[in-house]
Amino acid sequence: MTTKLAKPFLKWAGGKTQLLNTIHDNLPKGFLNQKFSYIEPFVGSGAVLFSVLNNFPKIERAIINDINPDLTNVYRVIASYPSELISILKIFQAEYHELSTNDLKKKEYYIEKRTLFNIRSEDNIIQAALFIFLNRSCFNGLYRVNRNNQFNVPIGSYKKPMICDENNILNVSKALQRVEIFTGDYQTILQYVERPAFFYFDPPYKPLSNTSSFNSYAKEEFGDYEQIRLRDFCRKLDSLDHYWMLSNSDVRNNEVNDNFFDDIYCEFNISRVSARRTINANPAKRGRLTELLITNYNNEQALSIA
Image 1 (cartoon, one colour):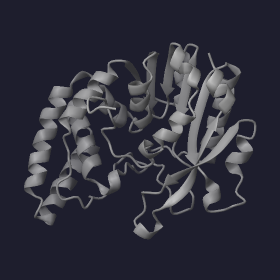
Image 2 (cartoon, rainbow, N blue to C red):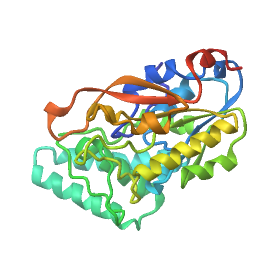
Image 3 (cartoon, rainbow, N blue to C red):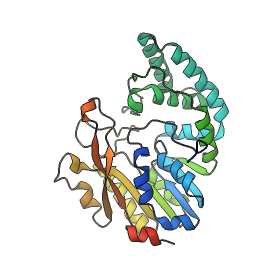
């Protein structure tokens, strides 16, 4: 890849940058040789989206979706108003960096911007800039809201975080000209999809423990009922001859006899892949673990799809 290619513009808990090689190895290779549609119903930071756009030249159509309207607003603003967004981010970055030696003033500035974001009274471009500022300056790039849809992540410890990556925002804007952006429940996307289509699902992960839940990306919780509802949607896609891949946590990391995903996806192909845990207040608890890649095709089919 070159520096001209788009890459994620957000930090994101559970972002897939570290697993891109593994995901690429498990994609349906036949899509390299034909026109196809790429659908990502839980777009997050878009790591897989940008990788696919950069590496699969025969994508005929790309569709992304997220239930979080604050997130999809950022994508739309970058697609349509990159220069205006960059101008605001440069101001935020200069102001924040000036406070780098004064922790109290930095915290006050951060809380001021977080409060303004949560009021949601600014225009779409400023809201997008506030979203990016908070993402780049909060604790571990975590996005979390409470039941009132209030972003409540505390300030991070970065001295001078990059708030405005101008070149990448322009690259992302160019890449997004090929992408349709939707906001809402992932199941509504199906009405816009034509065959042949490949879906990549990266839903809020099932927590590995009661204290490790980072799945509050929207005010609605994504519990076991929603995990099973997503499985049912994957079954529907399978019956319609679409191809899909899904990522999720491997709950066996904490409880070897927990067969939740093995049971609900028993008719599909489940692989356990090595990943790195990066979100934990205790650095000692960050480390290697396995995650799940689930597909409705096997490796031989991935090589022969045409």
